[in-house]
Every structure is written in structure tokens, then in C-alpha cells.
Length: 237
Length: 237
Image (cartoon, rainbow over all chains, first blue to last red; front, side, top):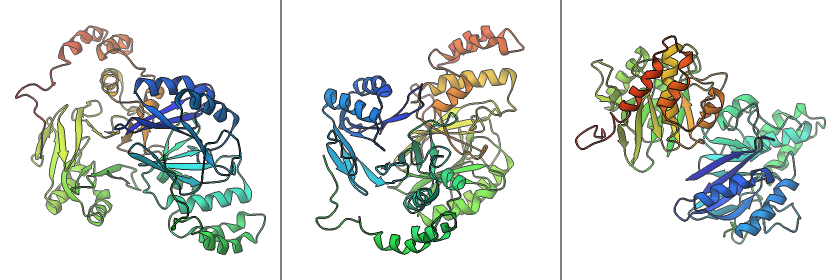
């Protein structure tokens, strides 16, 4: 396992390099322009071949850095299917699996701060971008969007052990990593139950009281993106 | 990799279970009496065989818990060679390697809070006990002992990537893990140079100004515990 976290000293934004020590194939997550020199230096010094450029959310700086990386390394840019920029090579969705060398990571759609927000799972760690910061959810996220995201995360995080590491997209109060256990404790998310039950329990926080009824809808839609024959086939390089 | 962190709700002390998913052999670190039910429940539920009981430092609660685990699981208790309690089965020292199943961990002697303090390295993580807490060194550690430990850690941590995770022996302000990068940043430890140079640089902090000269001694003793033919052979199960 080759792993590097790179912090932009000025903005505190965090980028990641994930590599397969056998085949030397690598992916990067959330590289902005300020990370470029450190990222390319690391890739070169370890003899890595960049295969895939991933983003947890779409913004101008990610797009510009991706252009440079595509040109220099021949890597492909992957983003959520809701992003319609022409530079995206692969449009990915919830539960996709991406392969690089003998490693793989899984894609989860976690809309909240942005409709295209993705979380990636690799080994014992999740890359959460702006979805989960070190101190919890993004402070600007409020109301219905916040409860919906909490419900989504409640169901998603159940699938991982509580020691699973959370690597955010930005430094916060000098911290650059957290764990599911800590996030649960701080956000009082609790464990057990499904997301529909969670939504009903937290519905009093919402301006629109009818959202409790939408719990039923969540329950029905839950299996929409499961794999089936000829459906949601994992994206592969 | 099987990994579990267990927190005693009352005291906030942290114990760890490390397991090999292939052979189901396991070791525990710093189990106190309050952790026992959770630890044994986890070992049983995952079908693990406890091979080795490790402690980062010696105290009564660790000793009592070890007695129970030895009896119930037939595991051996390992502690630093400076501990002369009769219940210790294996006396280990700096740079020993311990094996369980197809996994291994390395032992580092990091005296400071106690003369018998050990740090264990396993995969991408260090188990630091009371040597490095989430917010830095133990607040009760001062003066010469503190500078000596800082010098030791300065040299030791150079051997690991800065993403290496630090798992402490106690929860602190709700936090249960950190990284070498964060510890370096917070303790202004810096990188580069050897421990002798470090000791000379920080000697003004010491009551005894002659310690700067002891830097030379550190340099000379540095290779004392290296492996050689028939010397410091790794302890193996």
C-alpha cells in the first residue's frame, strides 16, 4: 500500500495519492493546482504510473489540475455522472468499483454540499472530501439537506468497522484525519437501524414535516443502485 | 488485517486487538481489567486465537488483566526486559520483531514516563502507549527526561512515512488517534538530522548543561542494539 496525504500550506486543502506497490499504478484524489508540484514529484520519485484522477466534488481548481495531469501522465479524469464538463473521461456513480493495478476502491454518492459529491472507500479508509470534515459535517450545510446527508451517512457508515479512517478534503484546526468512531460520537449519529428509521427520528429538525413520510420512499429506493445482471457493472480500467 | 480499538468508557484508556485474517492468530496491547469483557467478546466472535499479550508500560491493571488472559487463552505475556515481575513470559527489547500468524510487529524502547516504555510498529501504525498522546508527550514529563525522549522519538519517527498513524494509550479531548505528521507539527520536532544533533540543539532546555556533550555518547551507542550474528535475534513464537 502506497499512500500519501499532501496539504496545501496556504489553503489547507488535502490531496491524496494511492498506489499499488506491485504494479506501480496510482490514482489521485482532489488534486488542486497548489498540490501539483508535490504530487508530480511524489509520483516520479516512487516510479508510479498515474491511471486515474478522482475528485470528491467538482470545482475549477480540481479541473485545472486535472488538465495538467491528463496531459503529463495520460491519466483519465473521473467524476460523478451529474457533472457534464467535457473534460470528464469517466462518469461514475454510487457503488461503482474502480481498479488500479491489484488495488480497488469503491465509489459512494454522498450529495449534500454539492449534488456531485462522492466518497471513496479504499482498504481501511474513506476519502470524504467536503462531506465529512474532521469536526463533522460542513458547517454551511443546514436544514433538509443536512438531515438527508446524515441519514445517507448513517446507512453508509454502518457498512464499515468503526476504526475506519476518515480522510477529509481540508485541514481543520490543525487536524487531517479522523475515524468513523469519532464522527459518530461527535455527531451523535448512533448505530443500528436503517436510514428510513433515522429520517423519521430526525424529522422534527426539518421545516417540512412531511419528510418523515419520505422515509418510506427511501426504504423503497434503497436497492435501486444494487448490482444486477447487466446493471451497474463496475467501471474498470 | 483485523484491527480493533477498545476504549474504557470510565477512564478513557485504550486497548488494541491486532489479528491475522489468515491464521486467526492475534495479539492484544495494553488490555486493562475494564477492557476484558469487550476484548474477550471480540476474540471469540471473530474466532481469533490470542497468542501474545503486549503492554506499552507496566502497571497493576495490565498485570491483572494479563493473568486472566493467560489463563483463558494460553497466551504469553511480553514486557520490556527491565520488568522483573514473575508473570512475564517473554522479556523483549529494542528492535525485537514479534510474529503472530503471517503478521509481525516491531518493538521500540522509548523510555520516558516509565523506564520500561515500549512502542510497537505494525503495518502503517504505531502503538505509543503513554509515550505519545494525541496532543503530544505526556504533560507530566519534564526536563532532561523530556528532551531525551524527544531526541529518541526524533530519530525513531524518521524511519516511518509521515502518514503513519499514532494510536495512543489513552483518549484525550475526545480523540483516539493521530499521525506522525501531526505530532511533528505540534511538537515542532522537525525532520532531518540525527538524535545527537537534536540533543545538542535542545540542550539549553536542560538544567545540566553538560548534556550537550552527551550527544557524542548517544552517537556512539546508537548501534549498540543493532542485529548481528547471534546478537539481538528476533523473538519468535
